[in-house]
Length: 269
Image (cartoon, rainbow, N blue to C red):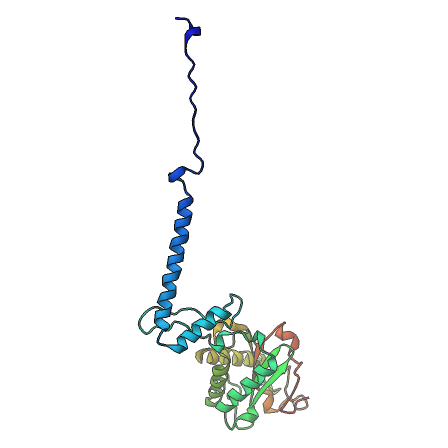
């Protein structure tokens, strides 16, 4: 048979748009439906937990009204589920960075808290503002020393004062520097000078603060300055020059502002 006599068959293929009943658009609709149902049941569950507790209901309303991812003071949504678990919890004050609190307010707060724990020792405590932040100073006086003369182990008084300070600053998230200062009295031996002594005392103070709750990760610097920065400049041998300084750092390098105190309640010039 000649090839010219063969029939030509043309097949028309009908393309289905959208896949017909086997398409994927229904999956999107179903996912939306399931999501909506989950949100509905979650809302009903939360309402059932707060139905008999007006305080929880008010907290929940406040949460949805004021929640912000960028607001450090916003409340957290849930701690647990069921039973006696607390649904909503206020942020604790110590969780909020004091970078937003003016140094003047922090100074007053720390002074009041620490003085209340050290009644009768107010003349050995200074809380002051300086350009680098807020500085707490614990100073010696005749007959009442933080460390024994020439020693670096805190006395019972020194431990008490450092513990009181730690209790007030351990919730402050700012970086902290600890400094040791001595008077100008020198030693007959040149092997152990006021430089070593002031540094050892600063380190001992650090250990006491950490034992009382200070977070070690907050430490920016621990250093000794011997007698180079006296509190009572007109009398380098004054016992009040022997002190521990605890700096709550706000900004900048604390080493740049060591002598920039804005006030001196103990009379130093």
